[in-house]
Length: 362
Image: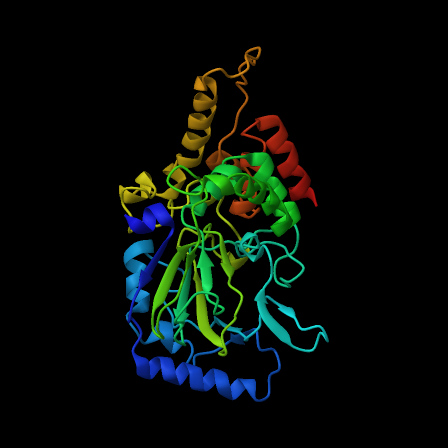
């Protein structure tokens, strides 16, 4: 239940120390010749990917997410994330060294992955490269906060689903503007700083401190950050980004699933109470109406808001189209792109078909 409510789960002592040490040894050997100390890539099976391939980590994640695209083969890709002492801290007067004083307001510099950003060379504007779970493994002991550790914002996965996944205009903005679009959520967060506590939508962030071998499993939509590093040590960690088998064929790592943006747990079939009912019943995803149900529920709830400004009733739009129908009409287009357009235009058949025809012709 803690995973569902908070959006993350920490598992202590999951990775054997020997495998952790082998991974650190492999990373340190790269540091001698590679000056990119912040993020290195593991592009093949090695001591780093053994963290996933040769430990209980894969099975523990599967228990929560269900089948993954990465399951049939050994994983060959991982992010090696190193945070140097003094990272996200100010400088001495001569600008040569860190003063180890954290930047003011660093807590508001959170993000989610897979969005267009000047620091992300992999995601162009107009795309969202989503996934199901972010899985982090500590490779060094982090004894106290502000040591370069991962920082997560409990419950933020629901906030981002509410603000973006269930608001077609904001989701479109997220695709176009990337991380810049997160300012909508950050303004809400900052306005609620004085309400921190039980009634706040944005509770106090949690620092992932612990020992080498500890694991954190996060929902894709969970807001997260890297704390400043005031310690004397490099923070070593490795991250895996894994995808549900519900992602489309082909270059699935360049896609996102709008329904999982609206319900963060939709694709996590191990969480039976909150994931897709059609999938739990063994039915094909073409029978899934979760997104349409969420949209309809939102429209109904808006109508029940007390003291809401009364508006003239809209004429019923009988010319509507759902995601499954749109995909069947345009089988040569990527299903996630079709789904996003249906959502963005709230199923207005005339607009949706017009937009899809433009893409199809081009």
